[in-house]
Image 1 (cartoon, rainbow, N blue to C red):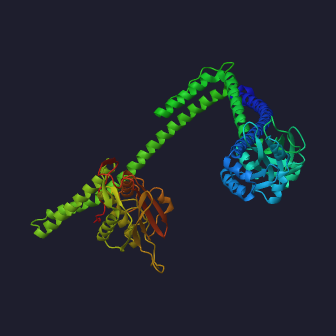
Image 2 (spheres, helix red, strand yellow):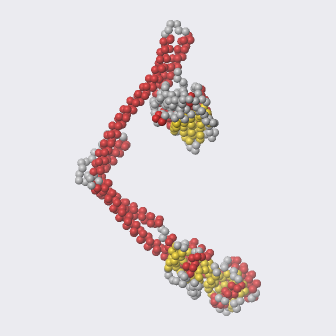
Image 3 (spheres, rainbow, N blue to C red):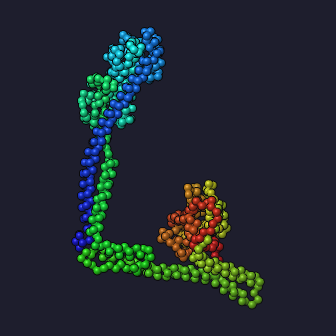
Amino acid sequence: MTLLSSLRGRIFLTSALLAVLSIGAAIYLVNVRVTREEERALLREIVTTGAQIDQLRATRTETFTTMARFIADAPTLKAAVDTNDPPTVQDIANGYQDQLKSNLLLVTNKSGAVLATVGASDRAAQIIARQPAIRAALGGREGFSLLPQTDGILQLVTVPMTIGRARPEILGALSIGFRLDRALAEQLKQITGSDIAFGMDGQILAATLPRDAQSALAGRLRTSGMSRVRIGGEEFVVLPEPLSPGPAAAAVPPAGAVALILRSRTEHLRFLDAIHTELAVTAALAVILATLLSFAVARSITRPLAAITGAMREVAATGDLTRKITLPHATRWGDEDAHLLATTFNTLTDSIARFQREMSQRERLLSLGRLSTVIAHEVRNPLMIIKASLHGLRQPAPSPAAVSEAAADIDEEVTRLNRIVNEVLDFARPIRFELTPTDLNALCRESAAAAEAAGDGPRVHVQLDDAMPLVAVDAERLRLALVNLIVNARHAVNGCGPAASAGPAGARLRAPAGPVVPASPAPPLVSVTTHRGAERATIVVADRGAGIAQADLGHIFDPYFTTKRGGTGLGLPIAKNIVEGLGGAISVRSTPNRGTEICIDLPLSSSSGPSLPHNAAPSWSSTTKRRS
């Protein structure tokens, strides 16, 4: 059989070839395209940021110019300047500064002398008063200027203060300044997402980047156009944006006043998510193409596969193992794997059907043997006792005491036979539970007391969880199951039972030979404990008896399995059915010569529900009565 003659070979070769070619081309195209588009997007974002910064600065300049005109035209300020008294002007300037919240407010008289200043020292005020913008304002024109500061650039707006309409007279000049500093740069960064740096005369005065990066940026103040610079292991794209002091119509930009706009190219190109998306789409297209091509190649075997899957589906739905797969005779385009699969499936179903028939027959014979052995043994003893009692009654003139004793024995053995028959019949009969909210702690105490009254043996130590709530169970059936488990535990400790039993008294080994030396303090020989979990209630019946042999541990819940003399092998199976019918689970852990622990888990979820009938299978009757 060649590689191309099987479905597996054709699909593998075709899909692998398409997947490799498609994914390889996709990776290349995505990398080229995304890199190109991201570079373009980065340049567009920088240009847009530059326009935003210029517009914001122009808007601030226009706003402060309008406010300066309004203040310069205020009669109170004009009157104070006309007095040429600095204290008077200073008081009024302080009031306006509280309203403006500008970085600088400066008032000069018509000769250029400083009358009031807010936000600058006297020496700085004298330097600012000699700026060309103030001289222009004293000449009747509005002036704009940019001044370097230690923490940024001060943009100054100066307007003349005049009196009169027809022939205005210059009283002085009013200057308002605001800084282009780090705080403004941080605000712009939050708006645009770009790092900002302000520089003048070849020196960076304010920036959002660390100080150690300013030396690398200083050389970009005298460049034009976009360039790249590496700062702290990252590559940045830099766009210098010249700063004009005022509106374009009246502005003459000073040399070296520049705003640098920076975007991290390294950070911007971390677009793995976009790459992954593109790769996923490309991979999906590759898979689709591979599937389509594989379908064209595998079309010749569609009918055989449909017949095989249809037969398998019918077998899975109906369990009919006699269903066979019939394929048409092999043709030139026939698939060898399909024919091999159909033949193997038919052989497998034949083998499974034969095995099931053999196992069913064997299980019926085994169950019949167990049941006949148990019933024969259990029924023989009562019949012998009844026969002996009847023999005594046939004696001439039996005494009243003998008649009474014989009648009592017959009645007891008839009851015993009836119990055996009911027990076997109840195992196959559905249980109808009557659920009521029950106190599990009280139920465990009553079960322990009933078990102690059933015969000699060690005391039962009861340890209860006080936080246990009411649980919806069938109290009578659960009590009977607990009584049997506790009696069984007492038998295992005092040696009342043989090695192991899964009968009414449970599954145990014979009691260990010799006296048991308890530890100090000695744990109880038989104990019943309860525990409340998050969603379940747990009841544990434990003993320090002989334990269960590992070979018998897997069969203790099998019906009719018993090694106890006089047992029917239905005790633990019935207990298991009761617990599972209540929505719980029962498990057994045992170590030979150390003891056995039987754990019952019951759900707490229905603890507050009403008493409802539940159906489960099967039921049982009490088996705690001692055999004669």
